[in-house]
Image (cartoon, rainbow, N blue to C red; front, side, top):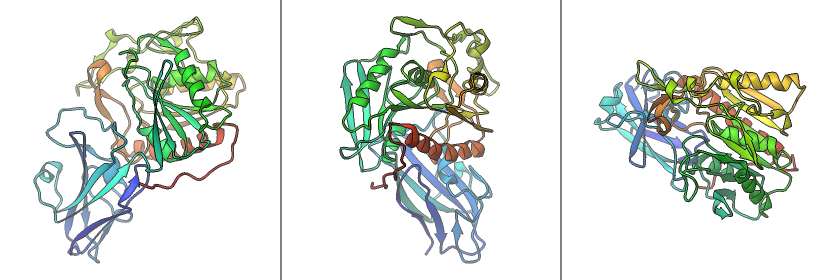
Length: 427
């Protein structure tokens, strides 16, 4: 009997799955498809294969000859997912409800079919797997204390666990998928929103760093959090906030991870303890559209060389820094920013940092094995923008960065630096 099976069938999203087929005619051509429905949106991937002499296919050994990816890629059916036909342009996969696992259907079809034909073709074999950002060993604590809001994801039990504040950029709201996964790996992760959430401002028009200091103090005060310093993990505009936290109150932030980040304040005014912090302007008049209809916002930020005094972030004041940079970032001039940062830190003789540069990688450096987004709709400019990167190189970067990020936080967050085992996936 023709069969497709996956091992394990229930995993966290950063874990690999072995996919094998058996019982097929030797030498026959088949298409293997993955399909993911998510809150009314549909994403899918597919590969073209030739069955071996034993009537089998193994994703770990056999190459895809076409489809959404090629060559031997054991997890290609997950990271190469694109939006299914018939939907509006620019959809981005972004897990908003981490309480609900992703239900992915794997199916096998006769012949080498394209994405259009797969919409109506009946499969000859199929199976379903479940992938989650949050382990069943994780609990959620809603935060509504003083001015700060958000949710903490932590392993069940009293701890103490190493505390990490997790922040995103211009999307706003509360995005919790990375915090949930950090908690599944043993951290107490605080998904910290700063606008467009509950009674917080509807836009990020003015930033007061006291809000982020209050959040840091609240997290460190919790009995389930290990003393000795909080970690910060941030991406895009969130890196400005994370870096300012690490440099304005470094005694409280023992580790800072900057993903696709900035070396100066950008976009909006900021203040701390009555002091205004200058910033690089985001000039909408410079917004352009490419021939492909993509909004280019890369050049909308004022050049770093024009930064007013005080806008540059003094990274030398931070404790421990880890920078991840995509060399093909089309959203922010991250490569230019990190070059300036490195030049500054080297000139000052600092050794408190590590920089990881990824050729062929774009802006959205996230946990691996979820659908990769290279272009998507961006509300701030009301258009579809290019994030940058090429599919395979971007995925290689995601696979490398995630374990390195976990190791860095485990080493530098809190006063204890001894390693500990990650939580097992009990879903």
